[in-house]
Image 1 (cartoon, rainbow, N blue to C red):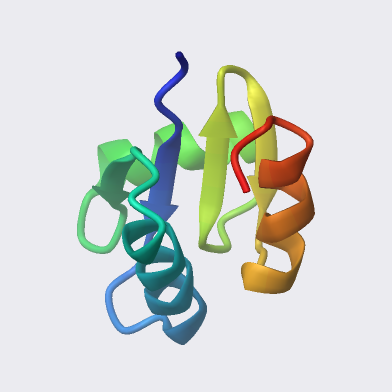
Image 2: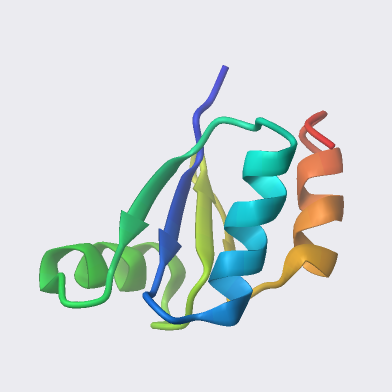
Amino acid sequence: MITPTLYVKNGCPWCDEVVDYLDTRRLPYRKVVVSGNPQAMSEMVALSGQSKAPTMDWGGEVLADFGVDELIPFLKARGQA
């Protein structure tokens, strides 16, 4: 099973909602905080072509600048929601 990487920024309400959604459903993910971390920010930008968070990398499939409403179909397409 793939463990997705979730890139977030501190103080981002959309990031907080996505983290709460994933945690409530006990879906595994690796959280990377890009705030104050230039290397992580560069990694996220290289993956997604943009600097907005949250951004999720699911084994090379990227969902960028999203909220829970966009996350649900993304997860369903991967059998996770």
